[in-house]
Length: 484
Image (tube, rainbow, N blue to C red; front, side):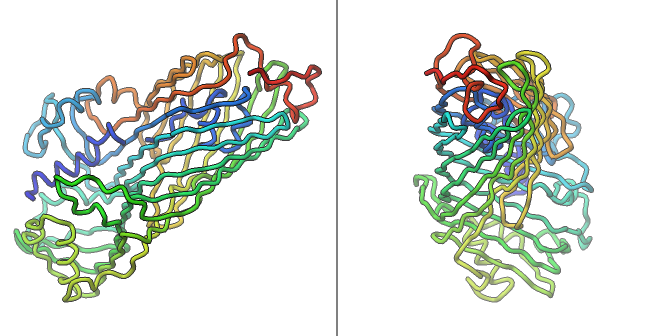
């Protein structure tokens, strides 16, 4: 594989897969009529839903973002149609206003990030009882991958500027990916308070893992290019693991969808709501910890460690001649230990979920007009866990039983500000947290798109069944039953 095509592949993995890869979809999850979809940010939020039941037919979200590479002057639609026309920017100086030029950012000193995720919410059902409980069932398929801390030295322009025998400092970093599905149950309970109500909730998820991989460089490593073919690596200490049933699949073979691991996941949440004299609340605040757990891959999995105190010389030309990953792994074992398979240390691959802590707040300015805030921050218990994207948003919105419109402003990884747009018309929802990726941008770094289709009780008018619900505050004198 020549260096040109290697770097184009890296950029395509960072950027061009945007059409098949998700974030936190504040427009889909945060409104009062989000229903079953709201529990994936905070399990206690089901008690906010004002109707008797909610059925999600299908919803999906696709997200990718990075600050390491970009494609110039394009948008999602053009990129999908013309991906085969992408050219490498480091061979085109200067770029000017040319389109579909893929390039790395030239800053090689600061750490970068690259994050992607996809979620498909299948059938999911929520039911609110008259006793203040909410119960639900759901199915999700999810995939998440990336690294929140990519060394700035891992950059084309860093390597191309180095002369022979010059040492490159390569700091520690982690990259992980996992694809899995989850079948879950939900329960939340609502209790009265002096000025409103509080609720707690839990999601318990049975997990099935399909694919996983991680690589963890656990200390700073020095890399030195001795000549055009040989690379000397010092202080190497790296661990990597992967599922192997689709690693070297041939072009004419179909994808092998095998359950390779199982696990358990839990979400926990709390909400506090201050009511006013209307059918809706004045203010609510919530906190949650999501995706506690891991998947243990016991089938078709392998874990390797490459560790050496002395310097190791690798033949770059030899590795570039390999056509399968197995060949490269075997050669790495030979280079370090003198024989094939000596690098393998385990056949059980353990990968943690993208655990995160979240804070939510929602304030009603006047009837139908709200402003919400959402913070999601990852919690990493292991370098071998997949990572969620740090996310902060502020979103004013208009909300009605039969429609919603919001313009969220978000900050990804506390570094990149984006404007979004989300719209709900009855039972249909569509939105994005990165509007410029749809309309066109000078530097395309990723995108975010989500949609949903659901069904809940058909009801005309503003009557709110929630306000007569058992377990609400005693301020209500008239008890209403849920309307179907």
